[in-house]
Image (cartoon, rainbow, N blue to C red):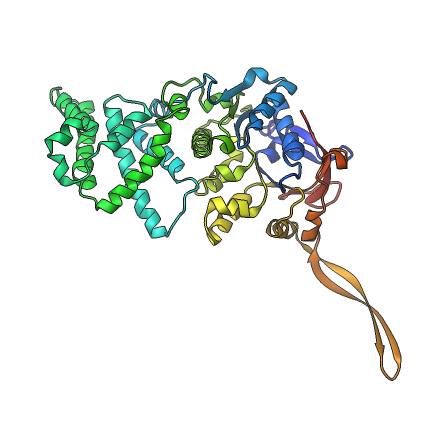
Length: 478
C-alpha cells in the first residue's frame, strides 16, 4: 500500500464529466465558503461537503450559531447512517466535559499542566476581545497568565479539579499588602486557607523529591499572591480581576456549570474515533455563553489534534463552523490551519463576507492581515453570490487578471468625416467583481439550484484548464 493512499481517497467529483476530484488531500487543506445571507451556501456547498465527509466516516466537531443547526445535523446523521456516532453536547444532553480535569489528567502533559490550563482559559477570555496596543496587550496578557497559573497550581496542589475552585481562589485573593496580615481576611479567604493548610500538611511530611517539588511550587504561589499580586497597582489588579470574573461567572452558572464543571463523558479524542460532536449552544440563542463554550471546545479540539499520532490509516476529522466569524481566535487559527493537513483535519468555515471577519479578528489593518494569514492556508474557496464589494474584489483578485483585446470604434467630424476602427490590449479581471453579484441563489425561483465559483489553490480543473470553475449545486434540503 502506498504511503498516501488514504489522502488520495476520492470524496466526490465537481463535474461528473471530468476527473475533477475533491479528495482527502484537498479536504485537509481546508475550505472557506463565502456568500451573502440567502445565497444558499449552507444548503448547497456546505451540505455537499458535510454529506460526503459523513459518508466517508469522518469524525466531526460542529459549532453552531443558529438554533436550527442541531436539528439539521441530526437530519444529516440519519440521512448518512451516522446516528450512532452523533453526540449532542448541550443543556439536557447528559454529556459533560470537565476540561480542567481532562487537561490535568493527560499522560503527556508533563510539568506544564497549569500553564496548559491557563492557556485554555486565557484563549476563551481573549477570543474576540479588542486588541488595544501591542504594549498594553503584552502587559495584560502577562499578568492574567500569572494569575491563572498560580490559582491553577494551588487548586492542583489541593486536589481540586473543577473550575469553581480556580474562581474561588482568585475571588478571595488579597487585594492589598495590608490585607495579607488581616485576621478577618484570613478567616474568610479560601485562597489563604488553601495555602495555609497545604503548607502545614507539607511541613509534616518527610522530605522527598515529590514533597520538595510541591513545597517549591507552594512557595512560588505564596510569593505571587502575598507579594506580587497584593502589591500590584489597584487599577491594574482590579482590571485583571474584573476581566477574569466577568468570564468566570458564566462558568459558575448553568448551563455551563453542569456541562463543564462536573464529570467527563465526551472528549476531543472521541472525535478521532468517528464521533460527530455537535455543540448545541447556538450563539444566537445563548450569546456570550454559547460563544465561550464553543470556543473552549474548538480550542481543546485543535490542541488535541496537534498531539495526535498520525499513521496511514488515521481517520480524517472535520471542524465545521457555519457563521465562522463568531468562533474566531485570530492569534491561533492561522497557525493551526498551517498544520491542519499534517493532522488530517478538514476545516470547513462558512461566513458572509470579509468585513464580518474583520469585525471579530481585530481593528483596521490587523483584521485584514489575520484574514489573509488564515485564508492563505484554506486551499479551496467557494464563492456564492455576494453584495459586498470588498469580498467580490477579493474573489476577483484571487482568480487573477489576464490581457484582453477590446475593439474600439471612433468617428470624427470637422472639415471632413473620418471613421476609425482598431483594437487595444488591456489587463482585466478574468472574472470581474460584479459577476459575483449575479450568481443564482437557489430556492424555488431557481429550481433549488445555486451557482458558485470554486477556486482551488495549486490545482487546476480539467474541465477548464484553470484553477477556478463555475459550478451549479443542487440544494440539499433535509
